[in-house]
Image 1 (cartoon, rainbow, N blue to C red):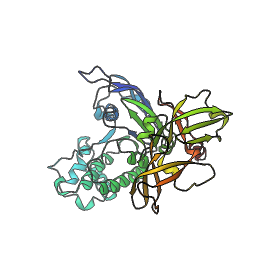
Image 2 (image 1 turned 90 degrees about the horizontal axis):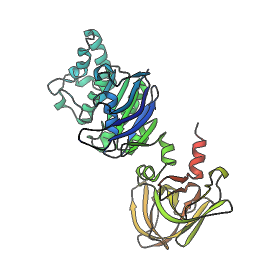
Image 3 (image 1 turned 135 degrees about the horizontal axis):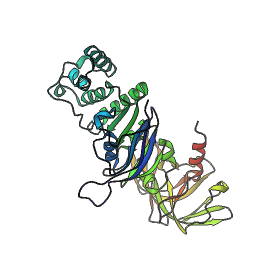
Length: 380
């Protein structure tokens, strides 16, 4: 049972005038899997290392179950950390790598053997206990690193990009193994990654960071569907959200958007969602999967366009389009059986309920989109 609370956490490294981590705060509930997600250099690993006690804290606090850990040595925090580099002892076999931490804590020999063999069986390592790390695959070494953390039975797991050294196929299988182990063991986990697929599939909640600050925290689909700004909108999603500069006006309780030769009316907006004022120019955000070759419903807005590129991916096709009357380009994710070819003239349909609006000056969201709001209200 463990709850982690981070309050106003900041970090300045020696020789730097800038804070690497700026006033970060969040809480991780007991048994929750929290993912810290962001680009390289955003401060997420620094936050993790301060939680672990591997980096001194410039200001703020780290508390576990209400006890402030700022001055508690790393070895006494009851935390297990798994690193990107595995950090296995090359001269020890798997059994002794798994047992090493327990021996340092003077755990009885019989208890060490019980824990090591139990964890090895769970992780599929029972047949490799006598092997040394050089005789293991990358995935097996990562499982040994995970097992070394599990066998300690800590209060909190910390993972620092543990899958980034694995190839694509092994990353998927190891990711699934991590998800299964966390569900079975239920230990509070904080996981750092720059990989949005890992974040979306593994986390109960995502904490997105940029330039040392927390940008948005929430369940993966909520953050994906309702980004608070253009950074989150573009960072999550592959391909990312399309962002188009369009003219905008309020008229009789609805929003009119001028997109090249087309006018898109947003007239299904709840009264509480209509902004009091609206910039004359806004950023229209729409996900590639919300642009259709054939209108899915009467709520779709038709926009003329020219096909620039076609990218078949097997299960689906990505289409790059130039919108008529603008210099804007959009990517659409459509069915695999499309007949569209580069250079073709066509019309595509935008799901108006999925359109989101952002302020180009502040980059903050103005209108979240009816589809996003409805989908979140329907969540259990």
